[in-house]
Image (tube, rainbow, N blue to C red; front, side, top):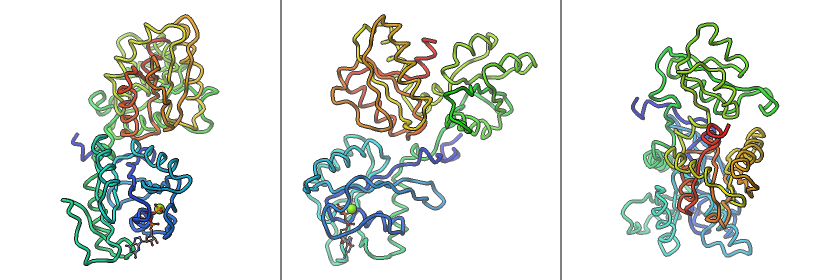
Length: 385
Ligand SMILES: Nc1nc2c(ncn2[C@@H]2O[C@H](COP(=O)(O)OP(=O)(O)OP(=O)(O)O)[C@@H](O)[C@H]2O)c(=O)[nH]1
Ligand SMILES: [Mg+2]
């Protein structure tokens, strides 16, 4: 399937676009200009925007995206340093940066260098502040606009530039089942409804799996672990069994030999994470010693079932393996990584269903750069359960 035919990303994985620049260059004005609203506070007072401000916006015939308006890079107010840090923390979360400037100088060069180093694409936006006589900047490619004008042509040009600059992988999602399942084949999805399952709904990876199977015109059969036997007893031969990672042992004991078993977390790891790094990191569990520090990275901040896996089950399994206590740090959502990252023996990352591919990839890259092996919830549970 060509990438252009792939489904657009869902609500949870919208491409993120950060707006950066010095104080008062018109960053919040740009957000309002793009979204044709009055969402962000605009004022002549430098330092108006403090915390990053997120705004969803659907680009017509394209994709829903999230804009992040940020504090000025040169904010010198009493909270300036902390605001600048919050602004910098958004960079690993974005798929595209809009760098707004009135005059190009050292702060713009520093930011552009930072973005280039991190492989983040960016558009340069020269806010002319009504002065159409102002000479264009000497920069080779940029958009020159007067942001406070209601200019339909400029709006269209800006959105076209954003669509072109966004990497395809930020809004087109390959199938969880690419190359594994064909039309009309049956896939058994094992979804335990236990005390950890959220009440009244399915979790995102289960919903995504059903949707991706429907997109492939395959057949999804959704069961709880105790129904697996009756499915096979009826003569149904699924091509693949996908289970909640916590039910691995039960599923292996019930599914007949020869039928491939994987988990939602492993499918997600292959789609969004770094399966090679995860496989290399998994080996580290064999050499863990009491006292080794473990870093749990779980991106969902509101899914209590994950808390139990990350905070209780995985630490207990690793401690049993190491034969003693392992100090565990849990980082939730996209909170900053610990400053002493390099001192961890192993990082264990969840499937990452609630974050974008870039956000997950950037996080993995930072962990690997610090020399810390990283593996994945599902792969670890598959090995230890
Ligand atoms: N005349 C004119 N004023 C503009 C233009 N763009 C922005 N402004 C004004 O410049 C001031 C600063 O704009 P903001 O959008 O708040 O700037 P910002 O970069 O978000 O500033 P901080 O949040 O403080 O970092 C406001 O008074 C805007 O009305 C423009 O194109 N023309
Ligand atoms: Mg602002």
